[in-house]
Amino acid sequence: MPMTSRTLLTIGAALLALGGTAATGVVVHGAAFASVAPNAKKAAHAARAAQKALAARKADMAVARAEEAVANDPQRADYRALLGQAYLLAGRFTAAAQALRDSLALDPDNGRVALNLALASIGTGDWAGARTLLQTHAAQIPATDRGLATALAGDPGAAVEILAPAVRTSEATARTRQNLALALALAGRWGEAKAVAAMDVAPDQLNARMLQWANFARPANAYDQVAALLGVRAVQDPGQPAVLALARQPALVAMAPEPQPEPTATPMPQLTPEPIAAPEPAPVAKPAPATRPAPVRVAALKPAPTKAAPVRAASGPYVVQLGAFANAGVARDAWQKLSGRVAALNGLKPQGAAAPVTGVATYRLSVGGFARNDADALCRAVKTGGGTCFVRLASGDAVASWYKPASRVGLAAR
Image (cartoon, rainbow, N blue to C red; front, side, top):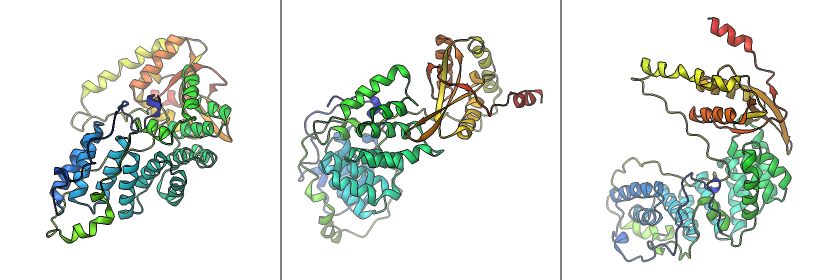
């Protein structure tokens, strides 16, 4: 299924097209499983190598090293979770389900493992099992992720019921709204889906997003949608090597030597379902304490308002949308943070517009009255400052009722 758009990738990296079957993990009599007894040091070394391979999206290497880690320390739930993630990256959903099920048996309250297991189960066609997992671990899986996974597991109606309340909270992000939009699309509610998606998608990209989702909603195989979200190609999968199965480990543990102290495990990367929203900007890097008071940095910020002056002076029908929020209060807080960080917004008046969709009263924050070129320039400045935005025609936008220009004057006089 040719779904290669980055808006459908869950780990924010470029699509890695994989062909054929994975070359590792099938033959169980090779060097990777030469150790008779567990070896914690070898396991930790292999796990770190697997983690690096996952970050680089080198699926075969990640599988080989993660299998080695599990073989040398079979009772570590996090190593088995790492192996499951490696199998997911390799497009091996049957093996991923086996590894993640073993990990969950060792760590029953791990919601992230349960979520990944649900994705693997969907990839193997076990929709009912995936829904049961999501319901059982509802308290451990964030609504944004659980809702989308529920939609992929064949119940988009329930997904909408999960995601609609999540969109109303102050913690809602563009990803939450876009997951709701996709759930609505999968439920056949295309008008509402488009209206929700429009909260965070630029108008000139909206139709393309709807076309993409229309193709996504008609998978040819059980694994197509999960493979698209993970940015992988599903392959024929013989499953996890039998020697690694958790059920076979008691005999292996009985032969183990005196336990060795385990090194502190490096946090493992997770394949989390963040598929739909355009990537959110990375946090603005904070300077080190030693350089923070440097006068050079302070001086460098002062010319910014001058550069933005032409944008403030221009007039036209375009606005720069800075985000969509649960209510005006949340939008006000976001404006205060963003305007304090982006010099180009200094002196501009924030605008608001209510956009009730699917019973969710959403408040859109913008600044407006620009010619198209000036709006584009301002949006670039916002993104450079760590914000997110897009340009659209004004539609019901008016100066926010909570904006108090007098307070700014008083602050400047001080």
